[in-house]
Amino acid sequence: MTRRVIRLASFLAILLPAPAAAQNAAGLKPAAYAIRDARVVVEPGKVLEKATVVIRDGLIADVGTDVTVPPDALVTEGKGLTVYAGFIDAGNSRGYDATLRRSEGGPPAPEDIAADPLIATKPDNRKGLTPEFAVQTALKLDEEAIAPWRRQGFTATLVSPDGGYLSGTSALVSLSGAVPRHSG
Image 1: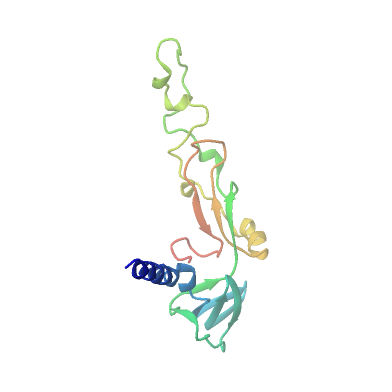
Image 2 (image 1 turned 60 degrees about the vertical axis):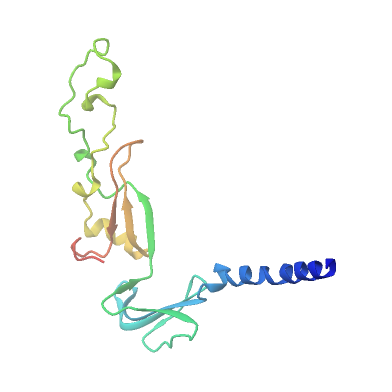
């Protein structure tokens, strides 16, 4: 009886880890990705219509109109999509009119700090705190400002208000030069 229990226990000890190894998520991820039949902007001024982009191990492996999709690739149909290979500037305080960033509480007014507790401080006296400011309302990006970024390979920038904490909301801006609602 004891031998039977030992054999059963050793048999289960060998078989139980097998399903856990099969459920390893890293082994289930595709090694390659492909975007097929997309409009690809290779560089400013050079556009490939109905091209394929192959990405292997996180790097662009091949781009072109005659590229074959590897059999192990996860394919995304790119019909109607535009693919840009470019940098994204993830934090920039240029590109908006900073004079438009002001408190919505009106012009500064004298305040008797001794009369009211600090929690009642008027918005216009909060020393630069403007959480209500939205950068997209003050964007000022013209072709002259965008061109140097685009030449260096940047395709988008996150324009953020400067000035410390709670200074407003940012805006992700495409540097394509198209009208904002058409850029993409």
